[in-house]
Image (cartoon, rainbow, N blue to C red; front, side, top):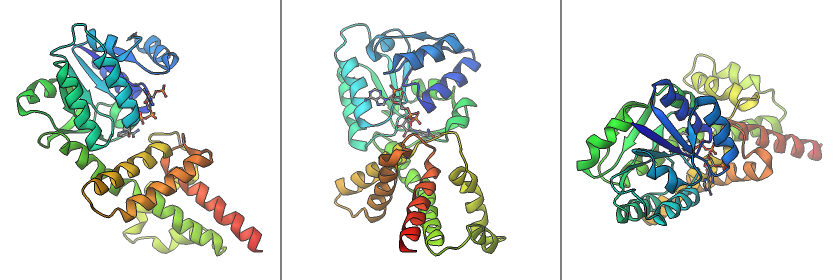
Length: 294
Ligand SMILES: NC(=O)c1ccc[n+]([C@@H]2O[C@H](COP(=O)([O-])OP(=O)(O)OC[C@H]3O[C@@H](n4cnc5c(N)ncnc54)[C@H](OP(=O)(O)O)[C@@H]3O)[C@@H](O)[C@H]2O)c1
């Protein structure tokens, strides 16, 4: 089977390593071609000029692109194609809004392409080691066809009904998972502004349930960790949680606040950094306010 990867960012490039490690033939497309070429040279994978050309030449394509806008660009490229693309499988592993996922199913459906919504839980190391957890929504009759591809890189596969339910579950999970660094950033801002050593927080929380939470994020937040998931992507995911709630006429107090925190850090130069590093930004603000007050 030839599997195409659309988007060779942190996740797409890690997935390419997983698949080639399993002797699957891989084809690549990336908006910035040079990044796909470098990866393609290293892994021996062919690089295509457009998503549509890639889809034409593979049995299944997996999209790992940033957001709604990126996925739409990919869809428009495929929609403009009149070649042999009916019957291909298109797996969307990107985190997008539920409404954009439905739009994808509709647009690709018109081309006879089988749409599988399959966002993932897990990050770059899990992708590289083929240990992702895939949440899957698709038409039931496509499930077996989809599973043949998903099992190449997923440790667990959860079928969650028809689109966009898997995307909603993914947003609900990220709403839980990505809040902690934002909460930690505010706690550290509080300590810094009151001139309290950060280690006091760790000392006091020793042997309590908070200790493993702090341990999980401390070094990634305050050291120089390599990006697994970026600040910009965390801000994007929270905007999508908020918009999915608003779409149903519900309040989105927390997701609005957390998305603003990540977006502000992103606008101040941390966009491509590992997401727990927003802590550094809020610590700096607290340090500045403290020195101007002094
Ligand atoms: N990293 C994680 O831990 C993780 C975990 C689960 C899910 N996800 C989701 O997976 C997706 C990819 O994540 P990532 O971490 O790999 O992100 P990333 O490193 O930021 O890569 C983003 C990819 O999207 C492409 N892209 C961005 N804007 C585009 C546009 N307008 N048109 C076409 N392509 C565009 C980029 O191409 P260029 O190289 O040209 O910029 C790049 O290939 C996101 O939806 C993210 O939320 C990530």
